[in-house]
Image 1: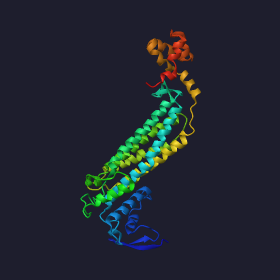
Image 2: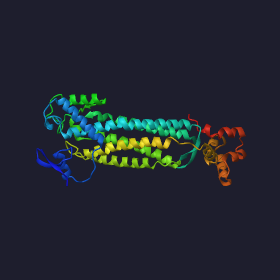
Image 3: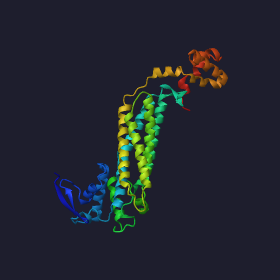
Length: 371
C-alpha cells in the first residue's frame, strides 16, 4: 500500500505519495495523464532548477511559500522554453561539440597515417580512379568539422531567452528589469552569451530556433551515417552508430512536426520538443565518443592487398586516355578484361609507350596526388 500525504494548491487538496518530492500539481498530472513513464532528461531538470535558483536570487524575497519566492514573476509558458534552451546549449557545448572535435582530430590523424595507402575510388559503386585511403579519411574529418560548425551556428537563436514574458509575452506580473537581471544572472553563472528575446511573443509562441538546431543535429546524423556505412563496407561494423543516427532522424521529424503544431501564443508540444532535442544531443555525443574510441583506435590498412586490387583494376586505363586516345585505351581495357590481365601488361604491347612512360602514367600515387 502506497503511503500518501495531503498536498494543497489553488485547486484544493490532493493526495501525494509520501516519498515524492513533487507536490499536488504534479500528482494531478500523474493521475490524469497515465500515458508513459517517460521523464524529462536530467539536464533539463538541472536547467530548470538553475533558473528557479537565479529567479529566487533576483526576486530577493524571504517568504516561505514557493509561489512568492522561486515562482514569482514567472510562468511555465516562459520558464519551460527557457529551460529547453539552457539545457540544449549546455549539452551541445559541454558534450556533443567536444566529442565531435575529438572525432574529427582522430579522423585527420588516420588521414595522415593512411596517406600512402592506395585504393580504388568508387563512382556508382564501380572502380573510378586510384586514390589514397587517407583522402577518404580527410573527407570524413571535414564532414564532422562542418557538421560541428552548422550546429554552432544553430545555437545562435537558442541564446535568446523568453524569460520575463510570463504567460503570453506581455510581461504582465513581471516587474521592470526582472528579465534583464535574470538573463544576466544566467549568463554570468553559465558563461553563455544569453540575451533577452528581441520579441517575447515570438520566443514563446514559436520554437523555430529549436527546430533549426534539431535540423543541424539531423545533418550530423546523416553525415555520420555515410561515414559509418562506408566503414561497414571497408570491413568494420558500427551498427550502434547507425541505429543512433536513425533515431535522430526520427526525433527530428517529430520536432519539426511539433514546431508546426503551436497554436497562437503558446506551443503546447514543448515537452516533446525538449525531450527529443536533448535526447538527440546526448545520443549523438555518446555515439560519437564510442565511434572514436572503439572504431578508430586499432584501425589499420592492408596496404599490400589494396595496392594489388588497384593494379588489377580496369579503371587504371583512364590515365592512358590523354596519351594514347580513347579508342586505343578502350582496346587495351577490353583485351585486359577478356584475357584476365592487368592494364599495365596489355599496354606494354599495344600502347607504343616505353616501360618508363607506363610506370609514370600508371603510378597510383601520382594519379592520386591532390592538385
